[in-house]
Length: 62
Image (cartoon, rainbow, N blue to C red; front, top):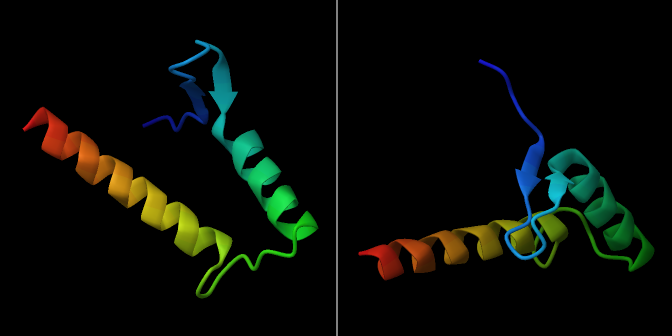
């Protein structure tokens, strides 16, 4: 199975490299003094956002 790091931006239609996106988020977090892990950290915030978005999409489809 091949792993892809590309996805398409639903708004612009441009190809987004997931690795580049992650690196950019990490760089911004470091510049802004945001912790990467722990309460209020980048990982917790991203996880929360992804789960909430997925649940909203599932409810909408249901």
